[in-house]
Image: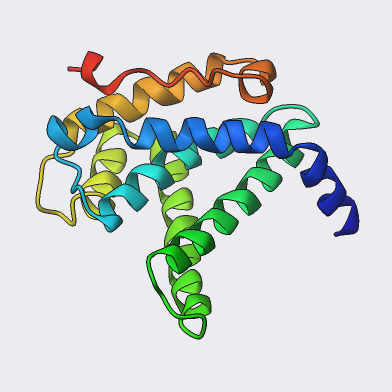
Length: 175
């Protein structure tokens, strides 16, 4: 645990940049305007979770030190979520409960998206429709974007994650 703390401190600039790229990809206006992702806290959480999952999934199958970077990134994401809740005015006593809910959602969606990307197209459609759209919208275009993003990240070398830029496709380019 102590070595992880020292590793995170040394990786802080990398983690900040990588987290920032995930957030920037999750905030692409086309996701909300063209894809219909709800422009709410929940919708933005879903978009962030989706992009973070794609990055974490890629890092975890790469050679060392990529899995260590994945763990540090996950820790940084949760630290950012905690800070965001506090900035939103969630009281100190309520933050741990909200963090538990968000952590369960993040991890559950990560598993669901990973399994869906390994399965057939209908599994990804179902996972996206359920999680991002609460079964209210067609997830076909978002599924095409996720497949394109996953393929781009699968081709990316470790340096793309360590130094940037992460090769997320532009959502507006996916029809």
